[in-house]
Length: 228
Ligand code: UTP
Image (cartoon, rainbow, N blue to C red):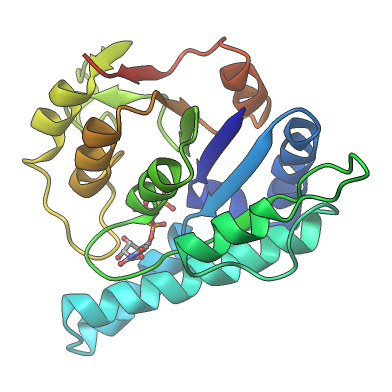
């Protein structure tokens, strides 16, 4: 079974957070073919804001965000024992690397990549990767516990969805403003890719890395997005 995991920036604040999530990923890689995409986190947002204050346009800010997602990819790889040594920057290279599996039954190595190009976030990168490699499951691990009808950090009365169709997700996300470093749970490009690919997607809270294991095993308290 192929699983693509998008890791939000929350894990990359310190070595402890990275170690904890790396342990869970190593555990999963024993049974699943694992593809990981790393987000930029707070440090990306801070750098983007500095660039914006200096007058940089949004595409330039996006490139700054991408650079930070790749730094986080390298940090995660530093904590993994069974990963390809460098972050990938292209979907085809990831698929090719995965195709080279040792014949002696050795586990396939975990592939890690950050951002790819301006105009979207690593949620979309992970969705495109999931589509390209025909993944069975896409898990978006973020700092909120699912998809809401409004940002729960700003609107305490926001309602969480336990389940959504991909079409409903697209309708919810198209009203979002897609600026560099924006705090949206799933970006609209990712939602469209999820819709067209039909890949089952689960959005979960990453504050406990154990939640990732549970989600892969079908137990989660996040939002599940299914094709209609
Ligand atoms: P993230 O994908 O980490 O943004 O990339 P995010 O999902 O909002 O952050 P998390 O999940 O909370 O950590 C950071 C920024 O890098 C740029 C975007 O500006 C994005 O907001 N980016 C990233 C791109 O332009 N293209 C990419 O492929 C990836």
